[in-house]
Image (cartoon, rainbow, N blue to C red; front, side, top):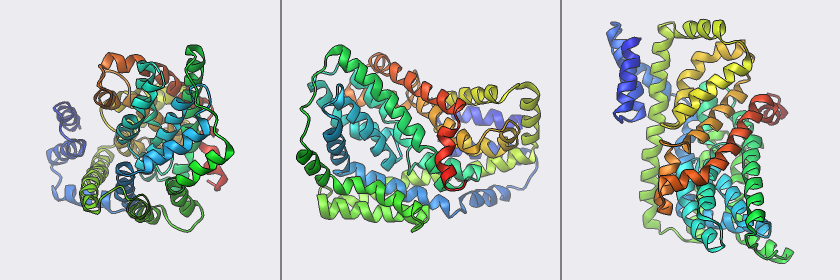
Length: 423
């Protein structure tokens, strides 16, 4: 076990891809213990042998196609038509556009690039201070990983043995809550700075904009409607999403040349393969740790030293925050979730609440200095220094922290909507 842990951290520090880090650590532990190496292959295949995991590549492909086409612009237009007249309306529209677009793409980084590059010049031109603009595009891009269809929530649901449909629903209220908290801050800052507002659109103008954005707005409606309407499984809905976005971008908007489709799908498939391989290798690591009796060791250590449910949740938050600065928290949950299941049950922590908190802390980790991935993406998009990005982002980090605390102390924020399904 010690050898496996040493190998894990050495490989992680030197920059080896996460899937190979996990597999290498598991291989070191298994082979050192004299177990047959064929178990590595068997457990890896077992980790990928899941119908639900087929959602991952299809959602990633449809999200990338939407990001490369006109979907992002249409979403921004629709939301700005409704909110642009408010104090800070353009900033608020950017936040909700990021939340909706991030939900479609399933990637915080893709959202920062797509919406950030689109809205950065518009916000600066409207008189928004650069630190405020940087804070908006850096942190709002992380909101989409909470809102369905969310690839991280899907991964966590599979790992914890929770219904994917319920896992999706558990992130809706916390995701919207964080978007509202950020919007309140932008609203107050805009009033204090007396930022200019857009003219309030007439009902006819709003309807015209919504009609023009109809196909983009229907993207999440069709995906989620097919799942919760009982028409399709999450995997079938993911396949539907690919054909839908291909139809919209090629036939309706016509902004992606048909010759580029293959290159986009090829890049998306590589990303999806990396995620799937991470899930598969995590299964190997979980099997190894289980055979080493780690679940019982962790259970005894935590139950004997942690005094309450809330102390346990704060310890988990600290763990996820640290990990979120370096890699996707979903990877850690896939590994630790099944192992810590007895601990969660002992403290009465709902699995849906656990999943939401882990993703929320992942969002905070994405924008926490000095290693948060979204910081570096925003620096590149805005041609800004890290200090500028951090200065603009910290108030929004406070908003995310408040959202996390609310989910910790009011678990119904994560469990109420899934409860409506009878979960």
